[in-house]
Amino acid sequence: MTKVDIHKKAMIEALKESLGIVSTACSKVGICRTSHYDWMNEDEEYNKSINDISEEAIDFVESALFKKIKEGDTTSIIFYLKTKGKKRGYIERQEITGKDGVPIQPVIRFTND
Image (tube, rainbow, N blue to C red):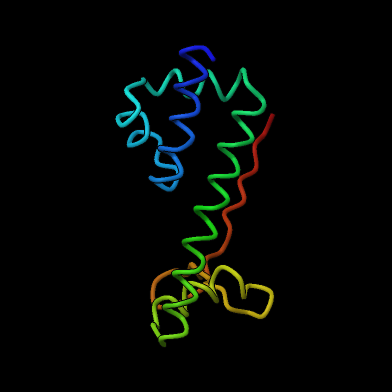
């Protein structure tokens, strides 16, 4: 096993511990971020491992979100509905109007070419 292989393995473990935070993992392993990203581009297996860690981190955070929703946390409930409930109408819309709510009329310009 080469030194690079040892660093890659250590990096994968450090990323698991840090939930995918690259700078934290690089500091722990003692490598620069550039090496990590080079490995991702050059090594398909390493890249797959990193993507798996990223998915695990999302799963972890989703679990925390659902826990807060079950506890009745209003902010978490609103966030979930605004991101996952759009097709049911849970979406913020911004209406742009003129002064005192008057609709804005488009300006049409004609040119004499």
